[in-house]
Image 1: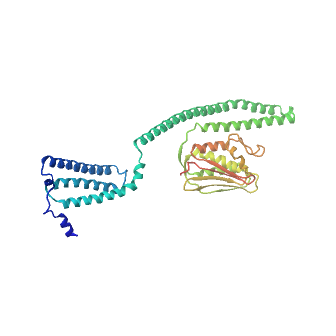
Image 2: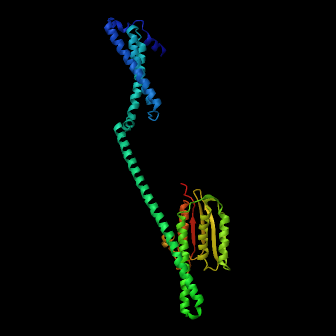
Image 3: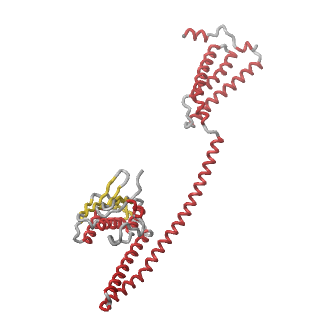
Length: 384
């Protein structure tokens, strides 16, 4: 192989290309200048390609870029050898450079054809401009929708504030006539009891009971309306002690009635302590109330933790309810049981839901008629 290369490189018997051109200056300079410019242009293209590849690494065509750069440099080298052989007959070396150029060009040509679909898939300037225009239109529409949504939110906030102010003022205005009704009924019963028939006495007592029930309803309505105005004060709360106090208070109200209460471990949470206590007061009192027909009433309070959230629950074995009416459960003044069976105004669960929602959580229930009920709630959004 080395002998073959030595034979190719031998130039003792050869004449430079300038002799063929009879050393005519115009022809010599024509070939020399043309080959020099072409060679420099090829080298410049290779350098530009290398700079582009280093600056735009996101446009990745792999080793083909370097193969193409080698091919370009080789082409430039053949032209500089053409200048060299005008004066020195190193045609063997020139041929070897041309052979290297041929190999580089062949490898580049073979690699370019499979790459052609990828190159054709690159968006054109017109396509990119169209995409940019479409994106600008979509962003403008989104901004307009956001502005419209903000306007609607402001309108809704005004309506909610007006409704809360209305309910607050109406509740206050209703208190005075109710106190008058209750007070005058009591005076009539106290001062004229002997002169009244039993039927009239019963009517007056019924009036006082209904006035008292209306007063409780107004109190609940006021509590509900105040929730919208009261700011949340979040801090770390340990529910266990709070629940223990609530259960002790309910046991006192239950009197001699036996209620088995199990309180499980409950983790600390970030919450408004006063509002969270109100949640437990409503749910635990409901569990005591709706299980009072049971000889062995049971109430279970606890929390189950998952990787995503902390779910608190209050479960009882009481009257329960039909789940097909569950959509009414948290509506204000909605009741699933007759007031003759279980007292209440139908506001407690609406208050509970409002507190939970203000904390960013959710509340739901599971129940069946005469098989008890379970209420579940979280105090923060579920992690996804």
